[in-house]
Image 1 (cartoon, one colour):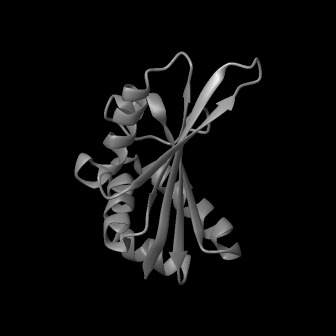
Image 2: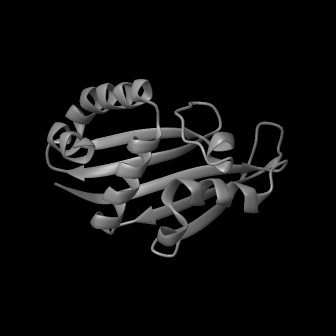
Length: 139
C-alpha cells in the first residue's frame, strides 16, 4: 500500500494569527515533516467580504505521509478512530480517498480530535484497497 498524495487544507480567518494556524498544522504533521511539504496559499473573501487565507500543504512522499497518518490515528481517541475507519471504508469504496477533519484549535494546543467545524482538512489519496491500507496503518 502506498499514499500517492496527502493534501492538507486549512482556512486562516482575518481574526486569526497565521503563525498560530501554521503551528496547529505543524502539531498535526510534525515539525520534522513541514519542510517536506509544498505550501501554497490563496486569498479568499468570506460571506461578509472579510479576508480569508486558504493554506494548502501537499506531500507526495508516501513514507512520510504514512507516518503522518499513523500519528494522527494514534493520537485521536479510540471512538474517533472507529468513526474515521468506518467512514473511510464507506467512502473509500468510491475512489481510494480517506478524509480526516481535525479541530484546528485543539491541534494548536497539541491535541488531535475530529471536528467538522473550522477544521484542518486532510485528504489522503491511497493507491490500492483502502481497507487493507487502514489495517496496515493501524496494525
